[in-house]
Figure (cartoon, rainbow, N blue to C red):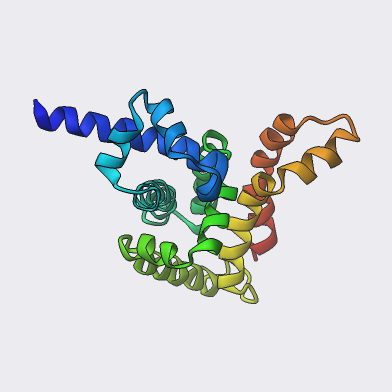
Amino acid sequence: MVNDNVENVEEKIIDAAADEFEEKGFAGARMQQIADRAGINKALVHYYFRSKEKLFEKVFMIVAKKAFKKFTLVLDTEGTVFEKITNFFEIHQDFLWKNRNFPVFFLNEINRNPQLIKKVLSNIDFVEMNMSLIDQINAEKEQGIIRKDINTPNLMVNIISLSIFPYIGQPVISEIISRVNYDYKTFLMEHRKQLAQFVINSIKA
């Protein structure tokens, strides 16, 4: 019973902290606000996590691992490269839509502390997953399915960039599309439908 209560309090703090950090970043987040969101007193937050730095690192690791695992799960499934590209965009776009503050939060914090991303990746078999996909892309090049002049690292960066940029660039994109009577949500819903086919058309032989 005691352990259940401890886990419940920790979970409340972590959930509240995730919202606070994603909205305001490390510098703007306040322990009192985290306590208020969790419905507990500030002293209890400090009791469980000692400092804002320790709480932030815990939250960052949890949120970042969740995002990367969604990516690696797609890479580890059966299917052609084209099918994996389609599945990636579907899963990644769902994640981003539900966590719209995450991309800016993530990039800001790894620029502030580059060691964080090393800690995240050290706990995920990301290299093996990447090599598996690279091998498959190379095999499909030889089979005449994918163009042989496609640079694999560039392809992977392009896929992630296409998926994530509309969220990072929201203020600019919202302003531009509003001038042609388009709203941001409609743009995102239509954009996500076109992503996979756009990439596939650009690489197929």
